[in-house]
Length: 290
Image (cartoon, rainbow, N blue to C red; front, side, top):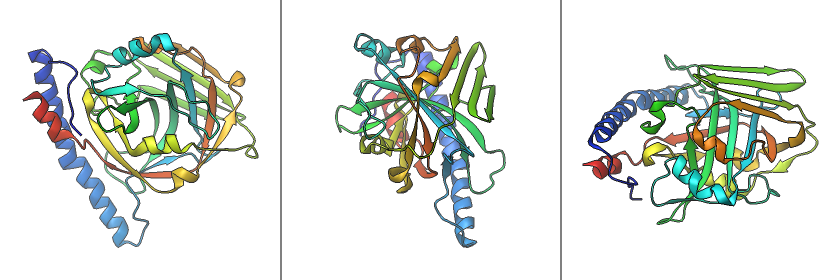
């Protein structure tokens, strides 16, 4: 797949890109091999070899929640510009559950991310991920597209999620409901959703599972994903969207282009392990700015 920048960037931006690409290369040569060594040690000890990272949706112990927001037809092109979507990609409709209507949407997920072995400097942490869904016009492959939600200067130049660190504060409380508070700089999100019965479940749409082959970060950096069959067989627990509270103050401009409230909400009931080929098109990106 040919990676392209949407337009020729100013020289100072090219310098920023080269520096950022060098940072990514260092991570590929340092942190990623550490994961591989962790893999080898786990296998040698007779442990399960599917180890890269695990997304916990172990409801209700470690609930993963997903909120889906519609994008109006009049806002689709403006949203693509606002999130700096590169040429060659287009927003496409997505259905998350087996009976969801296919819509242009933005998804918000909050979940616990963990590694099954220890790496110095990496702790289990709650992740907040905003994604939409795109198709490559050359390959017709539908993929995830990661979106940076905080109104910070580095968002324009961040590639590969290097600057997309965890928010300054994530508070997750459980009782009879899941309450999440997310704060970063001048931005704040709040989610409250009731826990639900596990007797009503929905299957995940094959379209949504297939989109998890790869994710585009800013500036066209791509991670390739490999996941086990657990993702196909995981279940969604629907939440009455009328009982979901979602609020925000501040945030990136693109947030004004999606509906204020989610049109559907789910808990994810299943634990899935992903193995990643990070920054898979790094060499192509170097060629694109030389």
